[in-house]
Image (tube, rainbow, N blue to C red; front, side, top):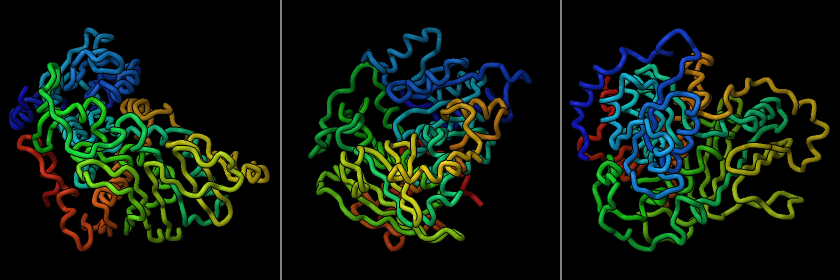
Length: 454
């Protein structure tokens, strides 16, 4: 199916939607929210299951092959009365008047277009992490959320959990003291779903497009190329045209706690420290280590956040006989060291653990409010109903967090240290990064240019 002409979409979508996003169609806060899911295979399964108490009114996916398991076709079989689409613009065109919220779980390179189309149609949105494939897209999403007044949330589940609140509370209570050094790591891209292992040493092998795959729509805004099973359904994350590598996959989880607690903002520099040799640059390096350098923020001192991926690790903490886990975080303070196991903070602890005993009364205090839902989609629905002002990882928070991740992605992708001029959205002294900061798009896939006009 060919993409719908953009002028036609905008004209018809405007007729099918309300003048602005409403809290609900009626004053009854118990009324079910009408949900459309864009990308329902694999990661999209979570959006479908997270909407089980609402009314799902549309499914959209570009791969309707009978693959079993977590495929879109298998999920749709469980909801036989839900209309199916392959183009989210056609879905908004035909079903826009019946949709309150759009949940987007497509590959990274099509997050932006789907999110912008939904917001232009005045729909509240959930978008999987990372929010977008480049920094210009991230900033445009933040502008669009303000313009259209919709409720938003990114799919970094850990921001809803207890653990991240404990980290922020302990830091703000002075338990850790001054924090100038943080270490975050993941085993991605090696050995995990979503990446090719061992990584490819040459261009992806092409095959005819399978029946059931709308290949042109899957490519979306990127340059057209031949189909390859090394791209979809699950291996797109490592290819720079479509994914954002290991950091893009896990960074919005693992960097969430230090970003929030330490009020990090944007780094001045992302230093490339170590990278496993890799010549096939269309695909991510097997292993990398970078350091985000942050200046002082008010009374908070400068801090270095070390990122490791692909099996590279910081030094294990004392009395840790089994070494470090595959994913985790260490925050080193002038008073105490905090350790967390996993890509999201679930059960943070001071290390060694016995350091917690004399501080237990402080550690048990919980001044921050807790999540009303425990997961992003539930928070989005609560915000749409007016039960809370907004979700925790709403776009005014999630967009800067994703920009931070994308500055690191540029360092890993280029194999260079990056000095980031956030005010001008530029890499200092190197215009070659401009094409990554704002990537070119195919005709018919341009969104958001008007938001940058004075």
